[in-house]
Length: 162
Image 1 (cartoon, rainbow, N blue to C red):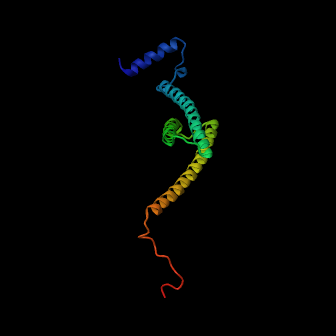
Image 2 (cartoon, rainbow, N blue to C red):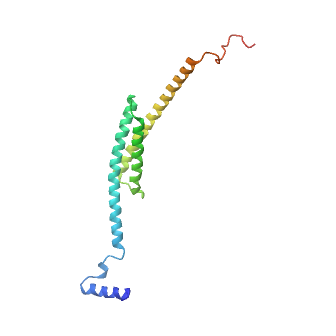
Image 3 (cartoon, rainbow, N blue to C red):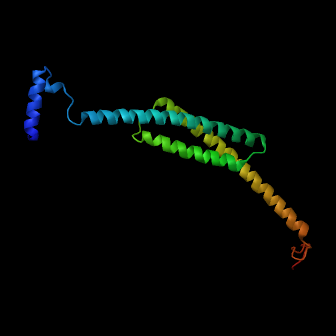
């Protein structure tokens, strides 16, 4: 039996059963519906993942920011690794929204996270500048302490060099 003949027999059986062919889903529609449901499910999962990741990043940023403000000791390497890993995870989760359709609540959370990251960056830059200045002072002090004056510039006296 050919495909056309089978389709005709199937249509006549459906009509005999009181089912109009127009009420049946068109070919491929079920696959589209499954893909749409799967996409919606993927977006919901990505949304939930994004919220969890943002929560973890905010805790990490708050901890580091507080330590920087109070000049408290902290493990910069561990915090930097946590932030890097969290941002990588967030980037991965947000790929589900590559079409640009992001829920307003998520957009607000991302903006708040961005604000925290900006504040954290300002504090880290200030901290690194202070560390650089202290390092320079210590380096100069060590060089001066080790110097015997051999290579020091000669003191200038009034009228010298005329």
